Amino acid sequence: MKKVLFLLLTLLMGISAQAQSFSYLRFNSGSGTEQSISTDGLKITFSNGYLVASSNDGSARIALNSMNFMYFSNTGGGSSFQLGDVNRDGSVNVSDVTTLINMILGLHVMDEEVANINGDSSVNVSDVTALINIILGLS
Image 1: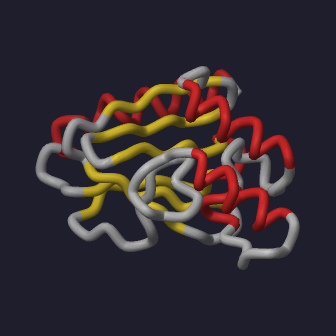
Image 2: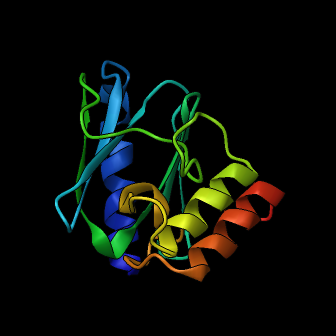
């Protein structure tokens, strides 16, 4: 894990000057899904096995063990969303908790890309807890 983090940090430092000319940072996960985040105000941190990327337009949290690769691009592609915005309405609040619970109960179509809040590849009550922590500012 330390080697992966060191490699990612080295890679990010090496291409940081190039990132200024690109509009998006794109992530590809092990399941083949992609998401992107704007490079406008981009800040990348690592926490408990996750890469956390935040920009002026939102944030993304990606489990390092499920990430195939990341790259800078001039096109967004994939989807871009704020971590916790389960109903994709642009804000993170209690209605996202309701939507997530309804997804888990099968009352709403499952959108695993936004529902898997904790990044463990499974959507369950742990994601509800993680979402509540985001809303309360505890994570």
